[in-house]
Length: 262
Image (cartoon, rainbow, N blue to C red; front, side, top):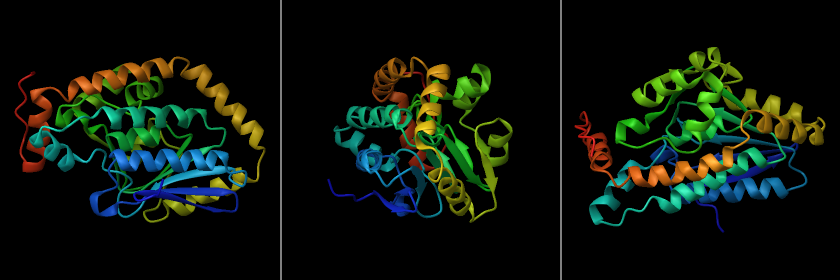
């Protein structure tokens, strides 16, 4: 499979996987999800890769779903989120299974699935101006990419509910104070700082890192796989609602959505 929206390079034992659709804010559409999945699987099998760094090209990490594409498909009567949800579900499940540490470098915005993809990584570095948003509610969708499982286990159910229910952005310093990211860097230096840690880990005991990942996931997220199956079904159901259509239309028209609960 040829890479068109994401690819990877390897240097000093570190693979850098970059989402590369900056003109559309690195959306997590089906092709992006497929490219990411292929890149991660290749890195996992690559003996020279000891650590993986995930980042985005351009001014943002990822703006989440491709809402204009969703609207076009809805209006054409062709929209089926199932393939995308299944691909993102598998990718998120595999992130926890990879034997190699996965570090995330976030610049600009990490919205929706982009935010939760970052949360599924082992360490997150973010520049000062970065913002993290559980933006699903704004377009009438339930959360995806494992966020509704991971986030409440990190900050508690009530705080997680507030973030999902309001979709309000969190700054990088707020994320750090909540224990959700590893380090806040100066603007423009996040990838450089992430690479310093990645290269340090690449020189360390790989088998120990694999064991640490297994222990942390087993102790914190033992039933993650079962949850992800339920998440996929609920999100597919969300896209069948009138509120979803109104949400994406309002977003594109830059107006408040008029939700009706249907």
